[in-house]
Image (cartoon, rainbow, N blue to C red; front, side):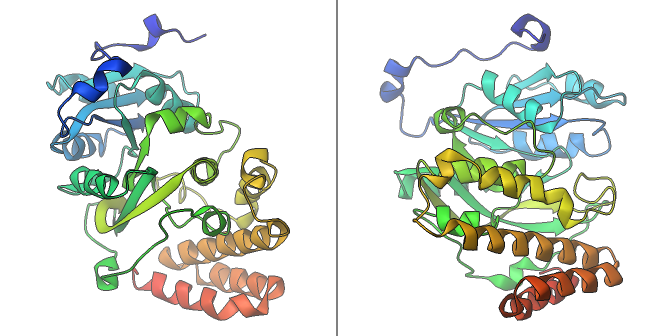
Length: 327
């Protein structure tokens, strides 16, 4: 069993008592960045620098998930009082994130993957959007993609002015995960804990399930800015091997068997939304196949979409073509 004495390697900043938070200056909102890391030595220093240079970050918590490389040494070499190191005994990424959130002292949480990097001013942009939407429990932006060497391969800057949903987003979100990466998300720590964090039984799309549970209890707000460099390479979780839509179906089943989510969906919509979610994930699989040159698989997935819904096929095909060009 992991205890507080076992996991904390660096002292955690004291929590601000709830009764005193209203006495703090308006600009002192604390953001805790949680970084799960397993054998992340190749990119972790860059990831840490991108988080620690954010002026609005109060702490960065790295949760080592049983690394056997220099991950821990890289964290220990960084001299910044905001940096914390926890150990997680190879319990998986969801458990690592949940552990980091448990010990976080910030009002807001941001879950950053150990191979991605925040863009300058990313956290400030999210906090600004949060101030403009005081009822929001989750604020999110957009991302671009980079390769294993850090070169930009995405062209999402061509989509200037693109808007994503704000407010009550549960119906749109259950139909497909339009957030994609936790590194573009600020979520209120108390709301995250209230919904139970990430489901450790899910291997993939656990973030989508968590966002859906959050959408069931509160509003979201969108900040239309590119906030993250999302690294696509052969060693990250979604691309380490050929993923098929069947890998994602347990998450679909979990979302549409979740009482908190189902209670908030309009009556009679769950079946249609479930099919939309399945099509969304098959489309995602086709997009990833195209990005990595697996064109035969991409065509097979498009054929699968056609069998599920001919009406959905043209839009899915357009998204796959755009993915080929990094959009």
